[in-house]
Length: 290
Image (cartoon, rainbow, N blue to C red):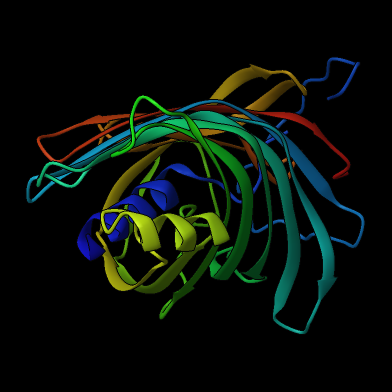
């Protein structure tokens, strides 16, 4: 179970971005010869629509699948220090979930009222994430469980804390057209806690329901080979000249970084192995960055 949740955290980190972005006007921006680390200021924000996050994990007989979308995921710069940025994250989540422990217990249902809030601490030198803290509050309608076919609405509070020992960015600045390189591996420590008074009540009646879930995990994020290619990219926020940063020649998908936005504008990833299947589609809806 610990390893499975660790893989989920790693996969979500691999598929996420520091920001993605609604702009009623169309614009095209040119890239200079070398594009260095952006400078963010108080009031800068990026809003993303995550059209799809489909995730299936298979590990040691356990299987978990998630099929989600996130609307208006807002990333807002709250403050700065001499070396870092502090950003607030908020958004709405919808989706389906299913879990099989491999020993006969299955739980599945719908996340139909779910709100995410959190904070990110980002290095100013390379926009690498030092740590991330999230709180997810949800009403989950559990449709598949030991009491089936009785649907059970369960309010859940999920707290996630993540720290990288050597923060790395998925962008190797400065960027230029045709650049190739390596993103080094790093380690992160993560913990996740799932709480609900309904879980406690159900646990007193049915031992298969956990009273509370708490997991600590150390995860190694592997080295990544990348190429950066200049392209014209259209998203909801507008048309931009951006770098298509492909990992392992597109095997793990692409992140699109636009200097005019100072952040990612699009993410596309599709991974399918024996242990994990991941499909992500996200793009920038709007931004205040200038």
